[in-house]
Each structure stands twice: as structure tokens, then as C-alpha cells.
Length: 78
Image (tube, rainbow, N blue to C red; front, side):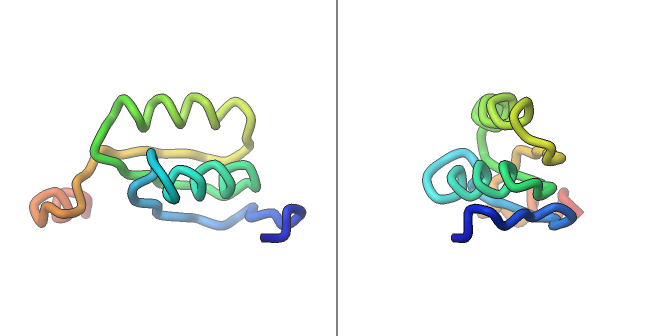
């Protein structure tokens, strides 16, 4: 990925944002200015990563606990 490219104005819905590839994407896009709506099944992990990223980034970050394997939780997001 081109390290100089910014994503200002880009809005991203990111699932699995607190581990593995999802966390790496969260960190990279937020560092480049994307606005991110991140979901994970664990509030504590969302809080930890958001607090770690937010001070170093101009990105707007919103989070929501959700298990996207659950149709009821998906429905509650709308």
C-alpha cells in the first residue's frame, strides 16, 4: 500500500476490528484519516484500540459491540 496515500473523507464500516487483519486495517486507515465505524464482540477491546488510536489520528472513530453471526444483532444495527 502506498504509505503517502490519505483516506480523508472515506467512511469505512469495519467488522472484527479488534484482532488480526481487522485490527491492522483499523490502525492503518485511521492513521490515514478515514472515518471508521468499527464493530467487535468485545467492548473492552474496542475501547482499548480506540483509545490507543484516537489521540494519534484525525480520524473520526465510532464503535459498536455486535456479533454479526447473530441475525437479531444485525437487525438491531439498522
